[in-house]
Image 1: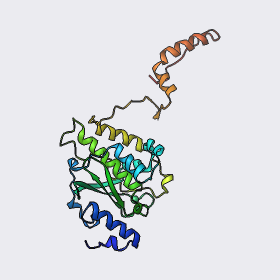
Image 2: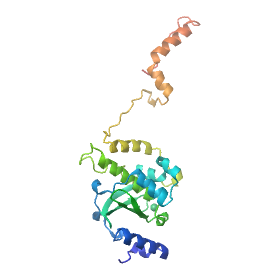
Image 3: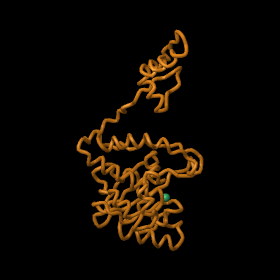
Image 4: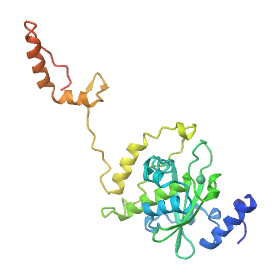
Length: 263
Ligand SMILES: [Zn+2]
């Protein structure tokens, strides 16, 4: 196998290790493939489950500790995925009945740069064999981008397995591609919007309708009522007003209240 441009620019130990990985598990260098060489079909994904992700990132590479993994929803890798930073995910056959999954993942710290190219190799049953990423940390075979791709595969597999997932609906219901990344260190990036995206994703995975069951809050002059106490007040306003009138009437003659307009 001839070295691709990517391999040529690696230093000797990294080059050696990279060659070793692709020779043993893939039979070609994923970095020489075109987008059209990959299958976008969910049914071609290796059956990666949470257990396989933990096994690879915790036991195999020690990238995360077991307790970090338990709180996976707070991991950068998971949030990269939920925020739509994993794109163009595709699959191709590799050696020994393994599958190569290739994706582009947005840079975590630099906006406007070409996305990273990240790949993993897994057995059909989901066991992750090896991985690579062209970020600085990726040479060590695990980084947040590798983690993000694994979470994306897991979600794709879940969607595939959802009974109500029709072929039509089953096309990537993944978080939509985010092109613009805030130019801030990752620790400063607000991932709070990930929460609602995650809910949508969970719904898609479970085959639930994507329409949200929104609670329409009453508004007062355009401002939203946020607190639980205010919502409680809306619900029990009539009762509360009556009680208030009773108490105030003891001290004030002819006391009465007007509706606030909350109801
Ligand atoms: Zn990486």
